[in-house]
Length: 401
Ligand code: PMP
Image (cartoon, rainbow, N blue to C red; front, side, top):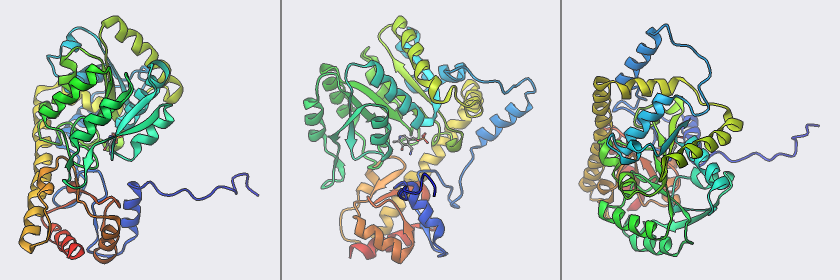
């Protein structure tokens, strides 16, 4: 018999499993609102025009080779990524106290950052919001950190539990690490206001809590890259230290290229240099060095003024379509007289709406309406279109009346 015969079948990933179930459904009216990826009004995946142009440039350049990148990845990409998230005029960049390494998208950046902290930071506990993206607890536990949660979402208001958040971070041991979604919180779509961010910042700095920002949706929330990066820049402006994991999956549509970056902002340039040397020791035995193609695409776009501007327009168009889906769904429920307060659909931010539907209601909608979503009631607004909004509104109406 096989030495692996004793293995039990592992469950599907809670998020990726939704698409697997969707694919098996033969119904012509089926609707997948589980995917965390942008879809056009026609329900199709989108490759940005500006990405096509950048790839063409790369193909035409016969001098390009396929040698290994350094352990830290494509150096120009790293510099441009730091500028994109921290701002071109960032004091930390000017003072050379930021180190940036190319990693395997947002997930890889979080993992490398987590492993670095587990090895070199004096506090091994990371506080993550409740709820959060399902991969966060696993990433940080396997990185060697101990994971605790802080209150974030209030189901009764479908908004932020700001008091609970302040209490929990206030009670966290001095120096603890705190994971913060930079914008477009997943799965709730609930973000602090800038005034609330300022209070969070003050509290965290007063207790020496270490911010670890997860920036998976820069530009996707508001349509503006700078607006969505504001919370991070507030923490940089006070001169303190922090980590930030960037992903280009959503905002450049580079999902499968696995391109992202980890930046660590330090207090001094010599420290940043030593931090980078240790990051290399984390990365080398994990995957040696990162892939070249996605980072090259990003570098071509970020270095060229025209391509950059074109990107911001395409990004804004994606963000605007998502915002328009929120309005259409809200209006469709209003038109049906669906009981309950649905204003959270237009208030929440980013790719997802946390509908407030419970697992039984979700499973009813899947069975009767062939609408697929995670059991926590999270729907991807990017998976909706004007054509499918009525079907979803009918299903929600049916399930709450
Ligand atoms: N963080 C959050 C909050 C996310 O939603 C995602 C993507 N679902 C990621 C990180 C990482 O995605 P990726 O590794 O594809 O960049």
